[in-house]
Image (tube, rainbow, N blue to C red; front, side):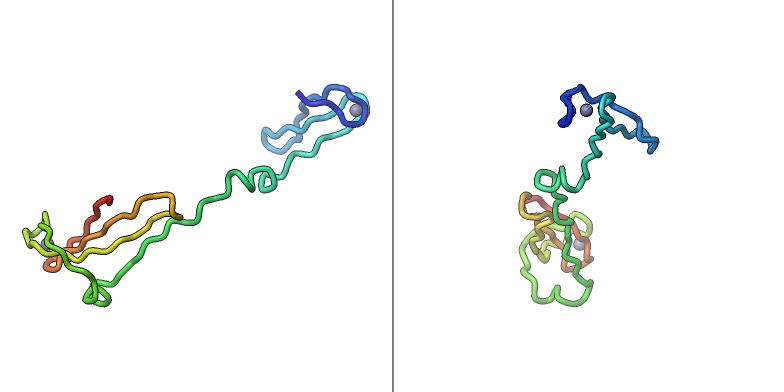
Length: 112
Ligand SMILES: [Zn+2]
Ligand SMILES: [Zn+2]
């Protein structure tokens, strides 16, 4: 419930004609409360999270410098995989451990 800052009357919802949007209007003095700008109202609280990012590596490059560990590839049975860590979100999520078979290139991940 909101009241008119000018005359203290109760503000009534009134259709704006734009979709189903409403504005609050004072029937007495015609004060209209402007719909709040979404960006302004949600800015602090609902700041969109930084876009998820993934490290994409080529099939042939970079991979040579990567760490290898002993781990069974469930695709070809090879027991050595490259391993690297990726943080998929802005820091509020655990690191995801990616692995790629040194033999067949099968890539999978494990949550650390
Ligand atoms: Zn009023
Ligand atoms: Zn494999």
